[in-house]
Amino acid sequence: MINIKAISSLEKIMDNAAFCEEVLYYTVLKNEKLNFQLLLTSDEDIDYKPKINCDFADSVKVFEVKKVPVGKACYDDSDDYYIGKDAGMYPDLLSEINDTIHLSAGEPVNLWVELSGFNKTGEGTFKITAGASEKEIIIKVVDECLSEQDFIVTNWFHCDCIADYYDVEVFSDEFWKITGNFIAVASSHGINCILTPLFTPALDTAPGSERTTVQLVGVKKTAQKYLFDFSNLDKWIDLCRNNGIKYFELSHFFTQWGAEHAPKIIAEDENGEMTHIFGWFTEPDSEEYDCFLKCLAVELRRFFKEKSIENRIFVHISDEPSKDNLELYGRRAGLIKEIFPDYPVIDALSDYDFYKMGFVDIPIPCENNIEQFFGKVDPLWTYYCCGQHKDYVPNRFICMPSLRNRVLGMLAYKYNLKGFLQWGYNFYNSQLSIKRIDPYKVTDSDGSFPAGDAFVVYPGKNGTPELSLRLKVFYDGIQDYEALTLLEKKIGREKVLELTGDISFSNYPHDNSRLLNLRNRVNEMLEQ
Image (cartoon, rainbow, N blue to C red):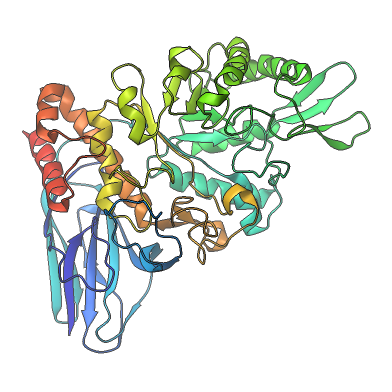
């Protein structure tokens, strides 16, 4: 006998699901993805192939939710909104099922189901059969479609980690193939803006050391001038656009946490040898580097215009500068604004003075500092990273409940946010990239960050990324944001805000049913 229990995508199953509420009814818009879970238990060992009938969705994907090892679950001063704070095995990895699964007597198997491509409206059923057992879920498809996503989302894409993990040469055919696979997965889960490594990103690198070179811009230095080769950048842009990417954020022109040095830049000299022309040894106000950037900007702006993406470019100066770096950052910002007058400057920072003094066009404060920017900055973005582990603000560590991940969408709507940034789509290194890690074995960057902070996809076999349930839930939140935006066009923002209630980044209901019911209510109102 196999027992089947249907539960929502917001549950994270540790040892048993007896406490989980069964959910047998969902509403969804025609072009959405709908995720839910099934928990199967058997009274004997058995190999079983799920029998599924769902004739109103063109795509039915079934994954097994697998647990991964967690060393660092959180920090000592983290709040209490976690599913666990101890090291151990936690659910996260989604392994797609194409054949049979094994059920061991008394041990639950957790399945994740994703439906998309709904081809009819009204009520339909999803049915799974296992021997004499059967479970039926009613799904109502509302005759409405989300508009093209206008919420800008970037999770930083680390090209060097792809090359390092798969041991492929940067810009080889195999590299481009694998990179395309990772970009396609990102795009299909709402990530529509991509970190573009003009030069090897000056991020998470120990001072004086370097990461694998992933420089898209070829440089040749002669006695008189710099020559630029954009062939790899051209290939990158085409690959991204073909996979649904709309926006491009250029990698930072100065090092992290204060703009004190230049990123690593490799150039071919007159003898045909490749040399470092800029890097950690470059002083903050280097006239030579300023000259280089001015020459580059002229050619880049022409190139982006030819590619018809000049209105979809963002530029970075330095990631997470502090107020101690305000003066230096301001000088660097002055140069970047001068040479790239048409591209907005965006940076993750949390001191309002950087915006007040005109150094940055779109400041991206962390969630717990957003109140000092709210109502003063337009457009307003936010970000989270390892620092957002307390005060109940949204995040997506492996050991956090899924609601804490998904609620970002509702809050982004409430705060009228236009964009979101997170630093780790596929960072497979330890802190400061001192060593490489295998994310299947080490999920906390070798004890550097809470597990899951550094990545939301796993480097699967044959160059194909495997998904985390955290990425799926994150995309559910984006769909919530877009559904609320659609409803606003029909009934006005004030009425939608009445529906969502008095919530803030630190104060929202920790109640799965309430969020699910709210989303069903939004869909019902769209239908009406």
